[in-house]
Length: 154
Image (cartoon, rainbow, N blue to C red; front, side, top):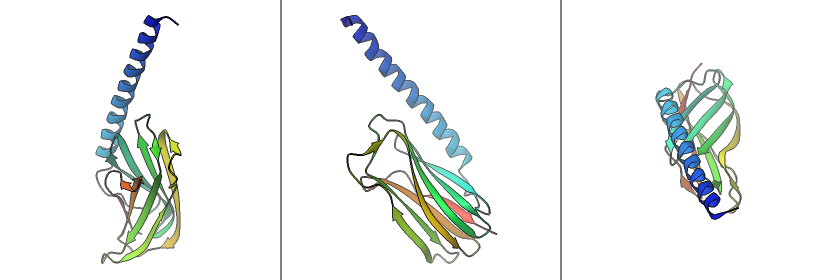
């Protein structure tokens, strides 16, 4: 490959990265606008929040006041990847009392995922009406973005 072809390839890579970052930012803005209210998990519910270079989402699965499992998702528009990650789920009752708390995930350094990482946390419990379920996503023990909430209603 000639020197001029290498320069063109490097410029194309930067252009492609810029395009990916722009598309990701637009997707995050749309997701944040749609997920601004706290959805109820009377069936399945999801909500997302901004995080550096992307977003985190809370996908809660269940029916009525029962929560089966929660998928905590991190999407990141960076070739650096999502490394040494974990997630937490907390449920607080209508009075604010802690009813459930779990933190789990991949915490090994050096193992990274590019684009999107999923962590499934089994819950399999019933909760009082109007409880709030929140998730948090961590990379290298640093919280990425804010907590993401859903309400639990009958």
